[in-house]
Amino acid sequence: MHEKYSYRIIWSEEDQEYVGLCTELPSLSWLSPNQTEAFDGIMKLAASVIQDMEKAGEPIPEPISTKEYSGKFVVRVPPEVHRKLVMEAMGAHVSLNRYLLILFSSRLGL
Image (cartoon, rainbow, N blue to C red; front, top):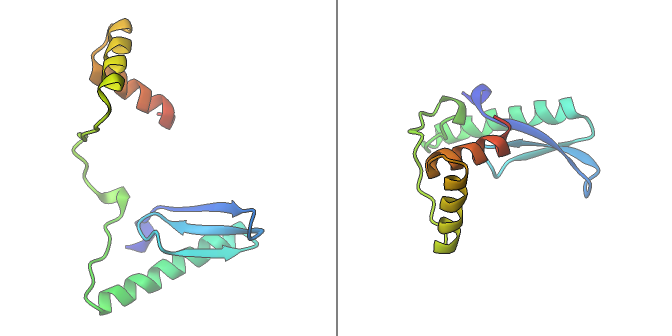
């Protein structure tokens, strides 16, 4: 299962090494002077932790890549932000939902 998890490698200026991270297991990290070793290290660590969790009967986090999403979420904003977003959506001749979708998509590079 750990092969389907979301991994990333970032540079740590403080440590002067690469840091391997796993989104589904945010408490884990692996330091290495080499990107490939950081990736291999965090994957092996995640596999080991999952194995320990299974033995202890703990719930295993589902990989983000295999989760089903409804496409709906609620966001609370101050009334003045809501008003401004509606005005901008109207100015763009689209619904508020469509306007927010455009904003999110452009921010995420989609």
